[in-house]
Length: 154
Image 1 (cartoon, rainbow, N blue to C red):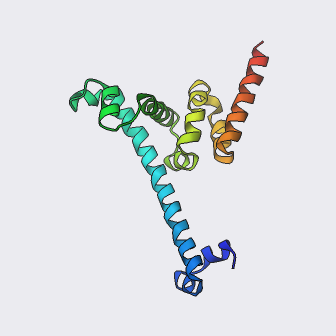
Image 2 (image 1 turned 180 degrees about the horizontal axis):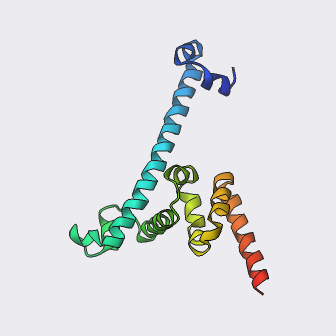
């Protein structure tokens, strides 16, 4: 039985699978549920960090500044937190749908955030690239795009 056939089967029918196949299906479901949860958490974290950064909430919370807060309370490097803030700004400013942000994910959004900020009129092009490419392919495409732009400018 193929993996696709297993996914389409009602839960009662999976009882006919071997123990190994049942465990594999459970593992797959656990991974995919966690992945969806991580995407939701990434979005919420980016938007929350943006709000905290812009409104200087860490001072209200008893921290010296935003950097102090993320490093002490979240055990996160300032640079990582600031990437998330930048992604949050782009998402807000371009009104990118939450589901789209979650499909693209943190790694690829980090790659395109600067381009989206600098070239908002081409946002759909870059978002579509991020949705359809692996991170490595996206990085290569962005480098290629920058070289083409620099050639045109020259």
